[in-house]
Amino acid sequence: MKSVLSIAIFTLFFLAGCASLPSLELLPMVDIEPAKCQRPWVTEKRQFVHAIAATLPDGKKTLITGVTTIDPEERSLHVVIMTIEGLVLFEGRAKGDKVEIQRGISLFSSGAFAEGLMNDVRLIFLKPATVPTEVGIARGFDVVCRYQDDISGVVDVKIGRGGDWELARYDSANRLQRRVIARSGSDSERGAVPERIKLTAEGTFGYSLDMQLIQ
Amino acid sequence: MIPRHEFGFKRPGVGMMCLLLFLLAVDVRGVHGEDARLAQFREQATQIQSLQATFVQKKQMKILLRPLISTGRFFFRRPAAIRWEYQSPVNSVLTMYQGEVKRFFKRDGKAVQDSGANLQAMQVVMQNITRWLGGRFDDNSDFKTTLEKNRILLTPSTDMSGMIERIELQLSSQPGVIESITIFEDGENYTKIDFKGLEINQPISDSVFKESL
Image (spheres, rainbow over the protein chains, first blue to last red):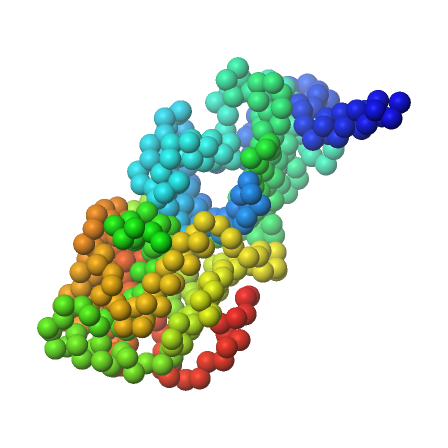
């Protein structure tokens, strides 16, 4: 009996740690303005500079500066990661699925790092290439838009009031991979551009990027 | 200990190394410096026991729509105590005291210790700075030093293409003092640090080098 209870508790904890794709309380698609689902993403070429507090898989923390130029029309990215002192650690471009490292130091020069970085940046700053397949509601948000394709899985976009939004990406097995929380802050002049964006990568080698807009 | 040929290129903290080295550049003894002015500058610099200043850092890159401006304060005391503090747009500090290098940054009002890979590199960097401050500047063969008017030019003697093309140190009218540092990555990308309000040989307490943010 004891062992059955242990297994049950273990299973409960295990399942609790593996967030999976939630079902949506669906809304009629016709009631949703397409622009509402697209609110997190820029519609014209923009540049952002963030101070990024990174928490690494081993729990260590470090501060870096990130410069991101997004061209939504070309679906291209230009990304620079540097130290606060201005030393460039990484510079690269991505267009479509193609990633090009222009320069990099040590582990920042690896292809795996560049691919992972660009995937995270794409998730935050580029609208999915598909259209929403479902639209629903979620507690605390106006609307949830679900984007889905066979390769990258599912991206849920929760749109809140006042410019706040959240993203969740699930893999093809519907396991949560990334969660992004964006808060617009109090600076109305910046409009819909979030003051703060936090990306959390789930899994054994999970990490987080806490991005504060500085320019 | 990292191999000398990698120094200043593969290690993430090397830019900082250069910045600190040249701010404190102060000890250019050992450079093959027959040039009398260089020798004179070296001699004047050895008279500096402590230094404090505010600074403005301008990062110019081809990608940037407008330069990234940072400001802060710098403190140095012989033989090897340093506080390099950024106050804007982010709050971050790098300290070295009694051989220990620490870095902190502020997030949500709290000081967070930075323990990323950069710090390990910085430890090596700071040890090297200490050596240079001890008069062994010529231990580092990674840069060739020349004097051009009132600027010291440092050019890499190893391949640092894409990272450091050259470094310019603008000499101040104050004897033995550098008033600005410019690190050129290439023709279009550079970092310039201007020092203002320099105070030389004023007492600086230990706490300045020990406190975080």
